[in-house]
Length: 236
Image 1 (cartoon, helix red, strand yellow):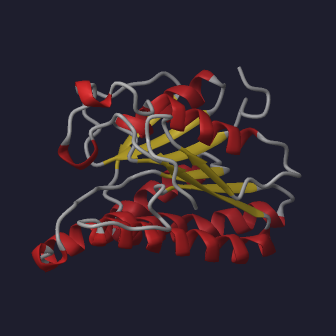
Image 2 (cartoon, helix red, strand yellow; image 1 turned 90 degrees about the vertical axis):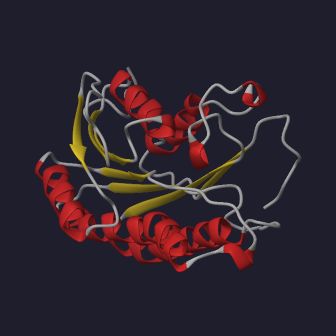
């Protein structure tokens, strides 16, 4: 158990696999209650977690999720849902643009927006709240074939920074977690592929998120950047 997380209520998006599922398991093991959302939650069970169907691009789905989370007394939100796509600029279609931007940027905006009134009410009652946005190490750099994906991560980073400025007025602590190569199902790949053997594991990123959530109330972790040692050093 983690004394700082014991009894906390955390909402997690993109929670059915990869980083999200690892985070749900880590949070419940630390004594937190988790409201976990994902497009497909059939058959996914973790003791201490409630799994709900959630499409972060759909306002009605987001509102239903937020209402369940607020009713449970949620005090932290982890925006983890995301998709990837890599192609030359000339191959980006409007449909693919909307698939990536709607999930990564609009989804972060919709879920966060839906819970802000609840977080503001917590502040008025003398209670704190946190938002952790899981972006990427490419939220501040780009590369060939990365225009669409990195644009979405630049957008998430901008939303995160603006929210941090605004949230300071109502006691909201905001953190961006930026990970490099992680062995997940990202961009249609499979977890456990041999070439990913030395990449970060989902549990590594989950541990970073747990750290941001578990520091004392006087501490705000603005950003965490982590890479596997096999990945080329990259800043910022």
